[in-house]
Image (cartoon, rainbow, N blue to C red):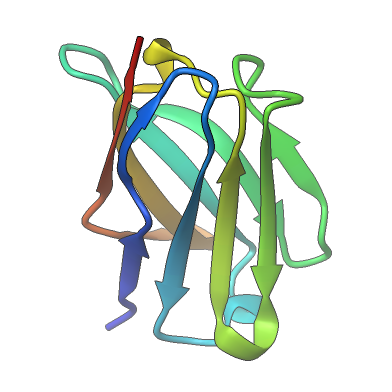
Length: 115
């Protein structure tokens, strides 16, 4: 069973930075893409960023220019560097890996941004 473990969440002031990590139990190049999603209280889970097997990156409109997704194949880890954080970025951040129609999720890591 594929396992994804997120880490790096925490409490930060607006304007600050955090770096999230997603450790995958299998070779990340086995997947079509690995990405980040987030879910704020009372809201649906939404797309944040992804990186596909070829290295193409995509970002949600609300994080474009502030967040950067990257990966380390040797560590089977995908990162999300989050800069210029805003209170609206407060959410549980989830890592997702997909191959064809199958998808795998991590347990999430809480990010809280204060004024």
